[in-house]
Image (cartoon, rainbow, N blue to C red):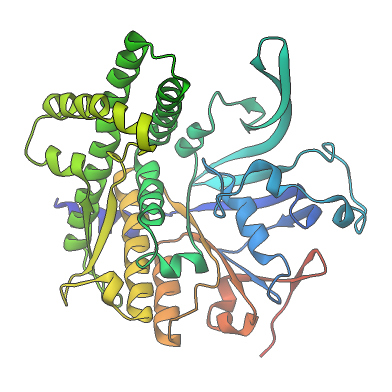
Amino acid sequence: MSAVAFCNSIIDDAKVRSAVKRLTLVNFRNYKYLRLNLKKPFIVLGGENGSGKTNVLEAVSFLSQGRGLRNAKLAEVKTFDFLAKQQSSPVFINNSGWAVSAQVEKFDEEFNIGTAVESVLKEFDYNETKEVERRIVQINNQKLSSQNELGNYLSIIWVTPQMDRLFQGGAQLRRSFLDRIVYAFDVEHARRISAYDNLYRQWLQILKSGNINTSWLEALEEQMSGIGVAIAAARREQVQKLNTFIEQNPDDTFPDALLALDGTIETMLDEKPAIYVEDYYRESLFNQRRNILFNDAGNNLNKTDLCVIYKKKNVPAALCSTGEQKSLLLNIILAQAKSLLCSRGMPSILLLDEVAAHLDEMKRDAFLAKIQNLQLQAWLTTTDLSEFVSFRDISQFFEVKDNTVKEVSLSF
């Protein structure tokens, strides 16, 4: 059986289901306490701008590894006291932290995910400690050693209004977008990036301290070169896989995208063995030592850029219209979700914040129909619930207002 036929057989025959069945928030953004019981594939949150719709989606995004769909610091997420006083609710943790928990159903399996913030004392200098916040994660009341393990249980993909300018903003935005895709297929990718960032900070600190320890620098550069090349290789491999998948599964509604990487290390890996590239990486770090000391120029070896092309027109996404850019983004998102289902058997949960923006009614409904056919749960926000009336049979509607979320019925 061909790869295409195999993927189609999974989607056509399997009873795919990955869904949050119950969501509980404590001290999260504008919600002192919130519990939602969920029973439909589409969860539609309606309300005015600023009412807290996106906050609910952000809470769901914290069921995956990372800093959520807003890339927020832990301290930014907790409920402020003046908001907490407006609501009476059960108290599960103190006001210094926040928590999100969910009952999740995937295929025929049910499990509970919980994540929260706790304060711990951390030693910084001799006889000096500070209280810092850290995130903890549990599955079925068993604490995980790392939040990256969440990738083995749940895949969450999101589209936010900020991503409408993905192809026109800085390379960092596109690199983060690509890394989120890689996380979904390779749960070790997040660990590599975290380890690399930690090593780079140590390397930079030694150089700027003036107390140069050559042996220590060489040891750090050895580790950084190995991890840095592994990061680049994972990005390169995932781009190749997505391109192949998009080519074998052309979309009938959204323009097919062609992805490429603009990065020194990725380009070298196209032509040279990894061990050669690691040597080059290590030598480059050595040569940058003097630059760091004199002009604070940082290491940019892993600062690759994700380039996206409108394949049929052979036009860079940055030069396409706003509507075409949104369509290209959704083409990539659909390819990621379908490829995850085919390659890992991992159904995704989609968080779609104001997804209807820049889409006409036909494309919006076509996009949602594709999600329905994949049998995935989708969380959607809107200022007008009637936008999704065509899918009312599979949707659960909520009104978000005054720091509360209330289920409502639509009658047309």
